[in-house]
Image 1 (cartoon, rainbow, N blue to C red):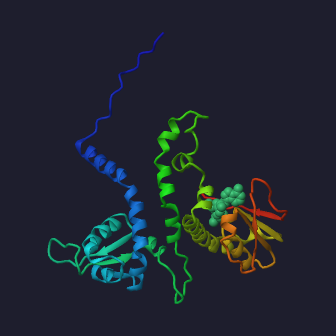
Image 2 (image 1 turned 180 degrees about the vertical axis):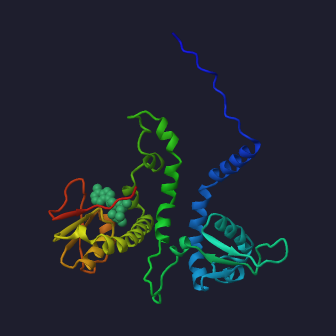
Image 3 (image 1 turned 30 degrees about the vertical axis):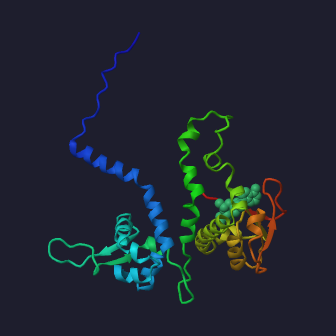
Length: 282
Ligand SMILES: C[S@@+](CC[C@H](N)C(=O)[O-])C[C@H]1O[C@@H](n2cnc3c(N)ncnc32)[C@H](O)[C@@H]1O
């Protein structure tokens, strides 16, 4: 017997809700531009320029320092407006009557987020780790193009030529093979991993020291350029720390003697050790 279901009816949506939904749809459609504008701001040095101006900078201040030729200067306010709307900076507009507008007297300020992107210098008392390299490591053409293959990956049959992971579909091989052949990306990616790892390790060694108790040797498997291992060795000098990674990573390091660097493939073997440290990103 077939049950009778009441006819499905669309919940009524008001014009106001549809208008709001339309705005959100636009927001989502163009949100890839947020990553690209963030990458652009970092490459132009905007966070560091604002920091060096004392944490707030006017448009003329920025134009005086950023590497933007005369012919492109009039476009900077557009980029800044987008970055402000994305929450990367804030802007102070001096109230001038009813229609206060961003202009030469407005000042852009760092937010906690953009403070994380400021390059440190020798005078930096806080010894901050800039996370700009991390952003640049993730906004490269290989990663971005891979993300454009999601639907193709979902609709391809397992085992078919195009069923490889989206990264392979886009770039013809896996990320590590790309790093091995593209020296610039290898450098940018490893610097990005190191920056993010330094940020995390500052917290881990100060707050999670108990996990290293009783350990005398540790191998950081797929440990990149050794940032985590060096942080562990510095905080717990009794632990013998080693880093295992692929040749293109290990061969790019100049050792300072604090940790041992081992070229290897973690899928083949891992050196004998008390503990294995494996830090990956999800
Ligand atoms: C996402 S990065 C993480 C690096 C480091 N653990 C960190 O958190 O900063 C992944 C690392 O795994 C390494 N890797 C990938 N395949 C590997 C393999 N088969 N054997 C050893 N290392 C590998 C890469 O070279 C890269 O340095």
